[in-house]
Length: 500
Ligand code: FAD
Image 1 (cartoon, rainbow, N blue to C red):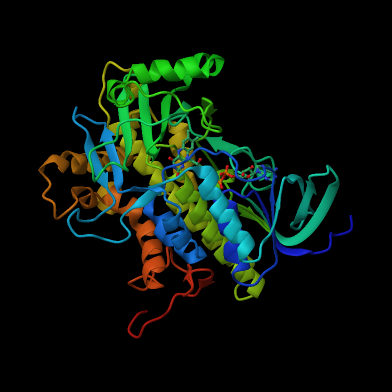
Image 2: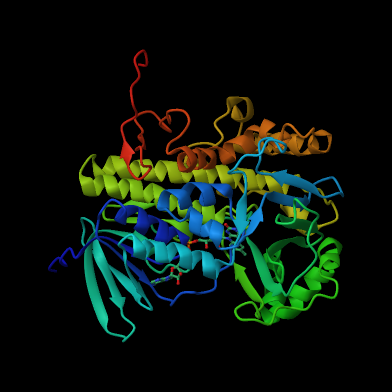
């Protein structure tokens, strides 16, 4: 077949956080980018609790941090958890030291319809050709590489567009991800179901934690409580997939029943009516969210955001992984389009870094579930490290070439399951130290697991705040690349006098 003309340098499928990040970061280097989004924004999406790296790192690099600050989103200093051995709630703060004010140790709770629109409008502003109400239906490819997409416009007319690269950022419902690396690999450990809706208000935690996400474990799973506005709270229950029939049969009844079964959350909502404004007037369900892919790119195509992978809603990693993955892909695309380095090397860097970040969160979230003790509960008994199936563990170890947290004191010799138990124990010890903490240091940062999971985010925040990391970035692996000064491309690491 004739090759489609190269109308664009990059075509991005999907205008969520992953798609707007990658498209804007490529357009900022002067390339021609088409973004095709099937909905007309603003559109609803779940995933409202952000991490600081997105707000102060990615948003700053893309030029929307001030607009975010003006948008009036609820500032979030961290999380409050009724979770673990202790019956009392404990705080998880983004600040290294709760007493020393750090200007980047907060994030926001966002209405995704508004947050996603800010990012998409920004992409348009920096030169991306954004087409809303248009759906990508297929990929144009030959044996060598992917060369474009087939899409339908608002009028239903079928079109084709060619480009040097296609990025799939079309989320968990992606139809085109199998063009890279075959099927998704689903996790059994995180195979849960969520049912969620909104209340027109609700009590707030005492200041300064009133913007925190509150997560409360109960017999059947756990519930998130996210203050979006004074008159709007997002409440969602995550339970075992065994409940799928009841939850899907009557989501609203299941949602109410689960809230009633969790006293800490029920008490905050006493007498508060359910929200009636659209799109918050519905109770929704999501399942089968935890998966990864054995490959994240092939010549001419890359996967980012939920199209590539997602772990679990606990600890708000989804939008971070989506925007971070978008930035990593943009660095490789900008390098390829400028012809600075070889395509294989640039995308190998993208894939290695993205997998590394995904696997750090995967490990951390396993240890987070492992920490909760409730011997009577089927849900909590099943969410122990010891219940990770051998096949899943092997598939995962193969994916990342070992455990992600490379600290040998934790991950030394021994089977992967034992090493994962060590990671979980390390984190649990840090949480147990929380009640004795003074207000100068945050004991969670004494946990290797915790520190590592936020390390890359911290580098991104420094880049946003100071225009670059405080220390020269080290390559992730021998022969690897590091981010360029503007954070939008990959370069060879600098060799300093005296270094080998
Ligand atoms: P999306 O936001 O899904 O965007 C994909 C876009 O692609 C959509 O706009 C869609 O319309 C478009 N699209 C799809 N198909 C096509 C097509 N064929 N053609 C054109 N366009 C297309 N994350 C957090 O950070 N914090 C949280 O608190 C959180 N809570 C969560 C709770 C639950 C229950 C779940 C399941 C997830 C949660 N997440 C959370 C994860 C978060 O929702 C996702 O990780 C995030 O939305 C991924 O962004 P994305 O840009 O990859 O995809």
